[in-house]
Image 1 (cartoon, rainbow over the protein chains, first blue to last red):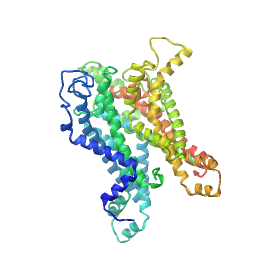
Image 2: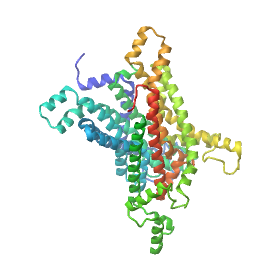
Image 3: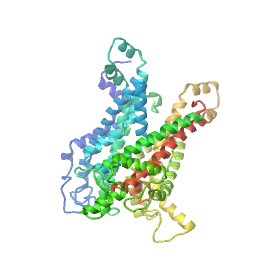
Image 4: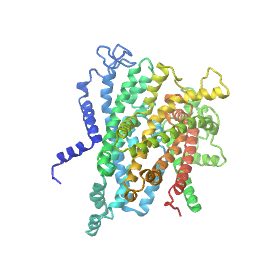
Length: 283
Length: 321
C-alpha cells in the first residue's frame, strides 16, 4: 500500500464512496450559503415589503413574499445559518456527553456501569420529542435553550456506542500496558480509550445533526420556535396559514430542510460504510 | 423464565415510578400557573386564587402533591382535568382509538413494506433496483413528516380534491354504520400515506443491512460451498437470523405508539393523543399531562418486556435465567 498524506487519503475515500462524496459536495454548498448569506440574499430577511403573499416570480422576489411581506428566498438563505448552528451545537453536546458517559460506563464497569445503564434505560423509555416538547413549551423557546435540550435528550445512542467500544478496547494490550506503567485511569480513558473508539461516534453525531435539525423544525412548526431568529420550521409554520393560496412559503422552506438533512445523512452513512467495509454495497 | 419476567417487571415498575416522579416535578416547577387560566380573567382576586388552589390541592408542596397523586393512582383515579373538569381516564380513553387507528395502521404498513423491499434489495445487492430504492429511501428519510403532510394536503386535498383536508369525520354529514367507517377511512388516507412514506425507509434500512450482515457470515459461505441451493439458504437460514433487529425496532415503535405523533396529528387536525398532550401542555393542565405520561410509560415498559420474551421464541440461542 502506497503511503500518502491526509488529503490524498481523503480524496481516495471520497472517490470510492459515492454517499460521502455527494454529502461533502452538498455540505460545501450549504456552508457557502450560510457564510455568504448577506451577499447572496437579494433582500433583508427581516424587512417588510409592501407586496404581501406575492407569488414566485414577482420582480425582486424570486420565491415570492410571505404574509408579512418578507422575501421568502432571503429568509430561506438566512435560515441556513440557524439550522446549521442548531444541528451542529446540539449534536456536539450529545456527542461529548455520550462519549464521556459511555466511556466511563464501559471502562470503569462494575457498579458505575450498572448505575449508568439504568439511567440510560430511563432516558430510553421517555419519547425524546415528548420530553423536548414539554421542556421547551413549559420553560420557553430561546434558541440556546432549544439547542441544549435537543442535545441533552439525544446522548444515549452515543453513550451506548462508546460503552461498547470502551468494553472491547480495555482488554487490548496497549491499554493493559498503560495500566501496568501506572497511568491513571482518567488519563487512560482520555488518552487511549476515547481517541481509539471515537470513530463510530463521529458517524453517529453526523446523523444526529440531521435529527436535531428535524427536531427544531418540528418545534417551530408547533409554534415553539425562537421568534427572534429566522428558521425554516418557522417559515413553514407561518406559511401553513396561507395554504393553499400561498403555497410557495411552506413548500420552498421544506425543500431546504430536506436538502440539509439529506446532506448530513449522506455523510453519516458514508462514514459508517468507510468504518465497516463489510457492509459496503459499492465494493 | 418466570423469575426473569418478575425481575424485569419489578425494575420496570421502578423506572416508571422514577420517570413519573421526574415528569411530575418538572411540569410543576415550570413557569406558568394553571390557576390563571382557570380563573379566566387577567387579574383574579386573592380569594378566588386561594379557593381554586385549595380545590385542586395546589397549595401543598410538590412532594405532598406527589404522594396524593400516587394514592389516587393506586385507587385507579388519575384525577380530573383543570380545564374541562372531565376525568383524565375518560379524556385519554376518547383519544386512544383515533391514535391507534392512525399510528398502528401506519406502523404495520411501514414495517411490512419496508422489510419486504429491504430483503429484496439486499438479495439484489448492488443492482439498479437496489440503488434506486436506496436513493429514494434517503430522500424520504430526510423529509420532515409534517411538511410532507402539508404538501399532501396541498396536492391531493386542496388542488385535486380527492380526499378531505383534515379531521376524522365529516361533521356536516351525520354518518352511521358502514358509511361512518368509510368516511373515517377516507380521512385516514392522507395521514397514513404521509406516515408510511416517512417511516418505511427506517425499516427498509434495518432489514436490508441486517440481511447483508447475515449473508456475509461464515456459516452462509460454508453453506454456499456445500452447494446448497441459494434460495434454500436464503429462506431457511438468512431470513430467520436477519429478522431479529426488525423485531426490536418494531417493538420500540409499538411501545411509543400510544403517545401519538404530535406533528402529524396537528397537520391533519386528527383528534388523537398527541394533540391532547400538546393542548394540555399549553394550558398547563397538569393532571392530564401526568396521566398521559403515566399511561404511556407503563405501556412502553410492558412492550419492552414482551419484546424480550418474543426474542426467546424467535432465536432459541437466547435464554433467560
